[in-house]
Image (cartoon, rainbow, N blue to C red; front, side, top):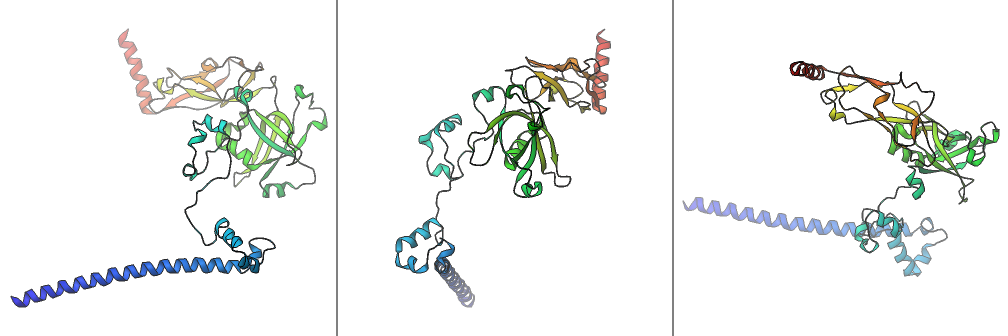
Length: 354
């Protein structure tokens, strides 16, 4: 019995010793790793200071060693050898008026609140008048005939043409000078495409055309994107043209379905086969341009055909004159077995009620 007790105590003592040396070695490894990291960062900083001309043009390593202020500046501003928990900021200063629109007071914005970046402001927003008419803004620059389109696309610039007549600016489409070569930054177009996708060509914009990057005034044209061409494989924007817009020009407005849950067919696996996705309309001067024309779907049954009488036009918006209202078809309603069953049950209930 004594032998077994000594053996058990010996094993336990041996295990405690192993744990002791394990903790001691782990602490030593952590301390060594920290020292190596600090020495590595310091050596990296010193190695980069050997050729200070790569960091700041005209600066020599002798000037850095002789002036400790320059060395501290490089260490803090260029983040060399000093990876502290500095505040992260986007570097964009936002006015207090814009912050109030998002419900943020200027006093509430501190350094700790900016660690994830300042709130992004939509660059497509215009003034109050443009916002009331549902018109956004774009910017573009003039382009010469000598510039290669391939070179522009490589640098993130999309070529295009501004064409069409505008009575407000006394521009006639019959005049060859009305066609203006443009180059639009890719970010401007992609911002609107991400927002509206395929409805981008149904939007009206105030396009500011500048002569060059130093120009601050520019000329504002009210336009509609037209003939947006994409790369056949990548799907990226290849060409973006703009058509001048005025109140007498028809505009293709997309259709959207409203109150689908009120339709017995659509709420039971039914669907609409879209024959027409857009309707051409005239919009009166001073009327807000709608994002879409609503199609009332209340009470739709299987095999019903949606016609012009279900379209809801806002005030000041009407279809073009040459559109045949009797033959205009949005699309038929079709459905699976559950939709047909719902339709048959409705017919049976009507018969039983009679």
